[in-house]
Length: 93
Image 1 (cartoon, helix red, strand yellow):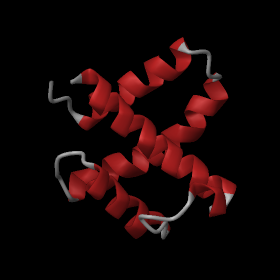
Image 2 (tube, helix red, strand yellow):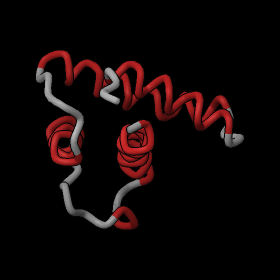
Image 3 (cartoon, helix red, strand yellow):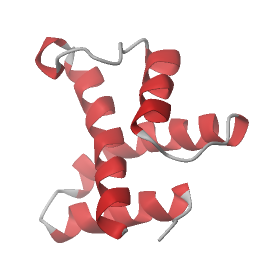
Image 4 (cartoon, helix red, strand yellow):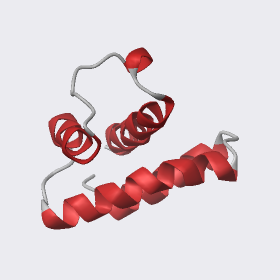
């Protein structure tokens, strides 16, 4: 199944709410998803780990292979938001 990015984001929201994540937590990830939507509109590509890493690097300065534990909390959240999308893509196939 090849879902549009907007559909993956909605799937991510629904999945997180289904497992009990708070509205505030899901909203905190939405900021990164909205930025990714904007990036994707200007640089349309298939969602891959490499493409997502490039977005994080270009938009937020997050290096591709950095340990999550070494990131500031806001960058951890941004990286987590993208990981959720990648996981939704994998599990929707």
